[in-house]
Length: 352
Image 1 (cartoon, rainbow, N blue to C red):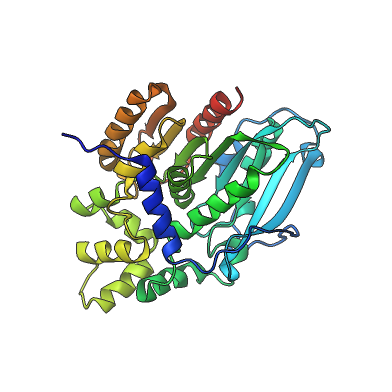
Image 2: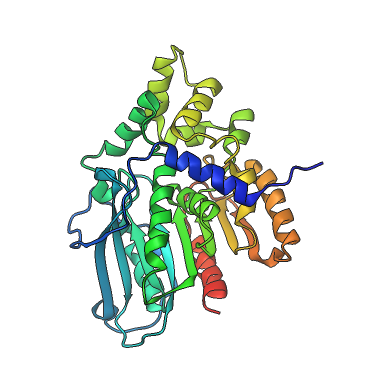
């Protein structure tokens, strides 16, 4: 008999883990910030972003309203969350849908501007953040790598996925208070690491009403059991190399991978893996976009979470709210097709 996933129990247990390595909680405060002129790790956004559908508006950049601010999500330097918000300048007092966009590894919120502008032109309030140890929260090109290694060695923080999920829960606290946002119409999406952030934030917080993780959803336990962990490990290899040395191993193997995940993100390859955290997003609309040949998110590893998600959505009489698209011939990259599918999904469920 297939086990029944208790969504509320899972959320409660996940929040306990998120709180377990947290510095003191503080009241959520908002502080104005200035636009970032020269973001760390500058790189041109992929052309796929430029393909995002946008309204045909002349001089759109002159008609956009930009807000830069900091939210305090906990004590300490990393508890200062940089936020970028774009919307159209309007006199309307009608509440709008909002979408949170999350960048990939070694990027930053400003990198997402083509998407923010395109969605803003179509009537959304668009929100981007710097994830932990990225963008304004990084002091050098090795800040994120160093945080991962420190997490392995001392178990003091959870820089891989979990700490940013905490920030996203606090961000939702802020967004639902805004007078211009409809609190029942907040979407979330991201690419790669940002896709993982979107997935886990939606699992943890039901205020994220429509969810589109792009090249982020994977089976961590499945990858370990089926010797398909190399692609994901290679994306943050220094922490696994550090663990290999500490564990006196000649090479990174299954044991090293298992111990690293358990140390830096407890439960990631166990009770909080995709077979459990994807189904609890039901009945909220969820579109998973992956490349069929992605070595970091092997498609075979999604068979169990997909099956369990279909069951959860079917039982909620909302099977049309779930879809998984694996684009043939595509590896670990966000494509124009994925950008368009995500756009259509948000329009379908947030513009009702």
